[in-house]
Every structure is written in C-alpha cells, then in structure tokens.
Image 1 (cartoon, rainbow, N blue to C red):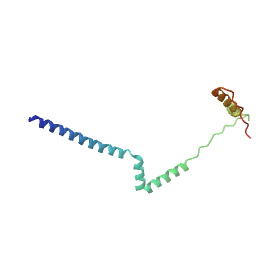
Image 2 (cartoon, rainbow, N blue to C red; image 1 turned 90 degrees about the vertical axis):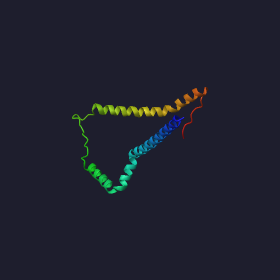
Image 3 (cartoon, helix red, strand yellow; image 1 turned 120 degrees about the vertical axis):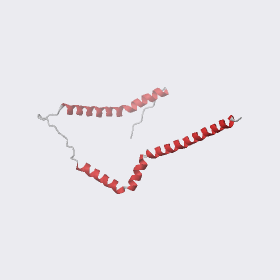
Image 4 (tube, one colour; image 1 turned 60 degrees about the horizontal axis):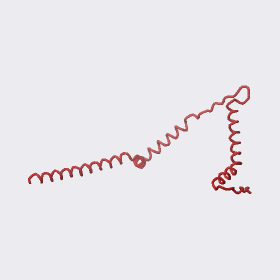
Length: 130
C-alpha cells in the first residue's frame, strides 16, 4: 500500500513536467513567431526611425539617377542593305500578321463545325456582324 501513493505522486510529477514543457514550448514558439515577423519589424522600424528610412530612400534614388544610362549600340551595314536578322524579323512579323488574319476569318467556321459535332446535327449558318 505504501507504493501506490508514490506511483500516483510520480504520475502527478510527470504531468507537471509535461505541462511545464508545453508552456515552455508555447513561449518559445511565440518568440519565434515574433522574431520571424519581418513585415511587423519593418513597420516598427519605419515608425521609430522614419527620418533615417526616408533619407536612405532618397539616397538610393539619387544613386540610381546618377548612374550612367546604358547606351544602345547600333551596328550599321556598310552596304546599306538589311541584315539577315532584320529580314528574319520582318518575315516573322508578316507571318504572324497573316496567321492572325486567317484565324480571325476562319474562327466562325471552326466554331460552327465544333458545335455541329457536339449537337450531332447540322448547325445553323453564322450571322454576319452589322
């Protein structure tokens, strides 16, 4: 009989340790959340040291403005004709324009065909826009 109270005391002690470790873990997690909340830190820092943040922003802006602008290098063909790259770009542009025009014109017919296949019967003729 003397051993039973000790067993209950041991269980009570284990429960207290578990509760204590849960509280300790909860406090650690709350501290970690606070430490990793960078938006809150930036907000508080800006509220406390507004002049420094504004001065730093102005300084960075001035540095960016003072940097020399990039200058685009232009290569001129001595013969005066178009280079092969320019011809390829021109052909690609014309091809894409033609493809867009064709798809715009063919789209009603394709939609009519798809609707006909989905319904299983002949589809009505599309109306012309006014």
